[in-house]
Each structure stands twice: as C-alpha cells, then as structure tokens.
Image (cartoon, rainbow, N blue to C red; front, side):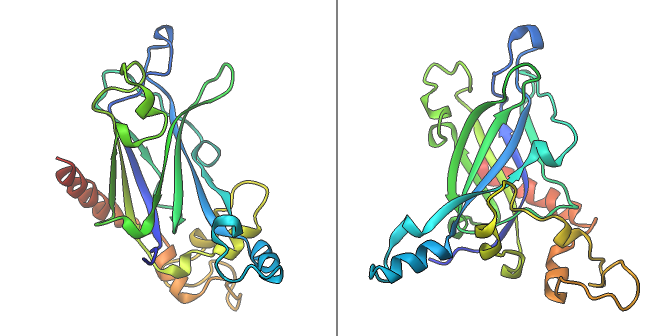
Length: 238
C-alpha cells in the first residue's frame, strides 16, 4: 500500500463525552492533538551499519508531535451534554498535513488541575476513502473500555474530514528532526499568496515552491467544499 498525504480539516464528535463535573455543566472542553510516525534516518543508518539490512521494521521509526489545537487556537470551546455534536475545526488558514501512521488524541481542557486525555486512535492515510473517516466507540482506545457508557454514550463516534493534497506539502525528514514538540509549520503555507509569490518586497525569494503554494495556500472558497465534504460524510455514516 502507498500512504497518501491528507490535510485534516475538521473533526466531529458525535455525542459529547461527559468529563466535566455537573457543577460545571457536565460535557467537556475538547481539543485535538496529532502525532505521527516518521522514519528516523539516524536509526536506519545505524541499523544498516550493524548489518541488519533494509528490513529493520518499526525500530527505525519514532513518534513526533505534529499539532496541539490548544497551543494553536486562542480558546477551547465548551461543549454541553445536550448537544448532538462537538465540532473541532482546524481552520482554513492552516494546513495540517499528515501521511502514513497518524494518531489523533482528544483531550479535555481543565482550568483547575491538568488536562485529561479522553480517548485516542491510530489510522493510516492509505486506507482513508473519499476524504472521510469514521470510528465507532468500540474502535476507539479508552472509549471502548467504557462498557457502562458513563463517559461516552453508546452512540459515540469520531468523524474526521480531510482534503487530499500534494505530497510536496509533507516533509517527513524535517519532522524527524523535530525534537522539541510541534513539527507542524503553518507559516510555510500561510505566507504565500494565491499567485504563489511571497508577500515581501519585490525580488524576495520565497522558500516555498510554486507547487507547494498551489496546494498549501488555503483559500476562503474552500469553505464551500468542506461543507459538501461534511454532508457527504454524514450521508456515508448513516
């Protein structure tokens, strides 16, 4: 199989998890974190030097942090128990590109004490069809253990909406070099205008290629395409 590069546009929780105490209205304050497995060139070189050959498996891969919604966006929304959905929008001025093995983690923001991990799951972009992914409760780590439906309703699902983009938007080597946290670089995409030119003075050389500008610059008219994608996803989920 061949993984494809996808941009995560929107994540929807079907029914709202119950992680906040009743005194605070119940529900939760959800936000999204994304990790990815990328090849570690140094580990691969070491393994090959030790004569382990090209088939060294997952020992040459490491997990890197790609995105933390709480760090990027100014406010975490409060979702109440009576709401049917909790929508986590990545935004159209950002390009959250992923490829290969990806982990999505949902956390609950708490002003008092530390944030709490609610649930998580892994997927591979090679197996995402029609730019849409849906997982039932019993396919989601942590949520599947809630047999009494105390934290997650029996109908709980997570839906993920994507946009397929060029492989040029994804640089696994650069991610593998990132050790300090966020490996995602929004400026690489948002500093380029629709003509593929940098907004700096004339003659300035952009470090983003024309192809990257075409796929990396997020235009406002993509809102309509996303709405259509969400509608198609909902129909597929029924």
